[in-house]
Length: 493
Image 1 (spheres, rainbow, N blue to C red):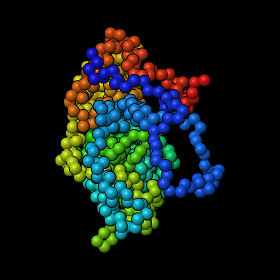
Image 2 (image 1 turned 180 degrees about the vertical axis):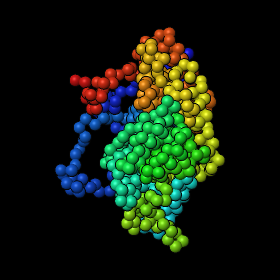
Image 3 (image 1 turned 90 degrees about the vertical axis):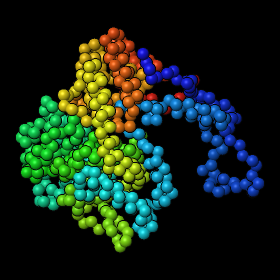
Image 4 (image 1 turned 135 degrees about the horizontal axis):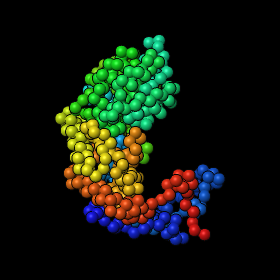
């Protein structure tokens, strides 16, 4: 039985072009009581037009209802669970938005002199201090605009440090359980990328790592917990092995939601890492932005951080541009400041105990889902799960149903799909990350849906293979859609 989803309250919605009627307007203005200005005389006749050809003409109520109906088509974190694996859709507390809209913060101009920006600089300084404490690192830059941007910044810092030591290196090691951006980042930075395989537990194979680590390796880029949702239990041993050979340990911090308040990367040997503020510290996410990917480093990398850096100046703060060893700016101004405000609000509202509890709740929720579903779906690894659990579709594939089919059927049950076919080292992966904000009732509804789909596959697999059935648009031809996209509406003739 489908318990969550219900028939949609809004009818099919045509485009505004299709409901347009000549002469309709959504506004009316009184006659001018001042002399009219000739637009053509003011801006030039070539810059003025009487009408926009083909522009829809609708009434105010038609426009309001159109966009309101369209808004109800979207699934959102305010409606239900996003089980989206490594791209966490975490609930953003509304207080963060209130703080970010404080006039002095929301309207601060990036060209304001330091003397008139003390409040903003203090926000940045407090966030840097908090992130350094949370990660166990010595210094933080807030400039990078997103996680992948933070990765590139971190690897450029590694390169600058090696060059300062007179030992430029040309190779980056990347485990097969790392995020896909890691090898891309290393390649963009000009390094040769070499893969390091995982062992049977889903962790880095330390023996293999020792074999491939030589004096040509600049760094290992590791995701911890990795994309299987597994904590790298040999991480201190890995760090020691690398440091003995002059290799830096870079950690992808996208999965810090499983570590905050429990373990600090700096304490287990990480030299440089990035954080995704939207994944761990509840800032907005999606649509390509906004974003922020701060980079935290140990002290030996601090001189190379992007300029400018915050510094004390009398009783206040200033931006220090005199950084001769810096890799240079990586982002205009100071980065995405509004995201920083939201992240600091989240950290201060929770405090140390609250952040730790959020981590523990995220781990609890993921393991609750894993325990409830492992009788129906094949766990990808026997190792303990952290904040996300990963299954393989082996049992369902035996009946001709794959992870993508299950995800589409999940839409019929009223849920956004989980992350499909990732990580790549798991054939037919189902990655589920509930985050800490999901209540037990929502988790139980999701679990019921997944179990119902597993039973459907056993009894009538075609129902799942042809899903979704309750959406406005049925299953699309994804290959054709990718190869021959139609991105422009044309009226019927």
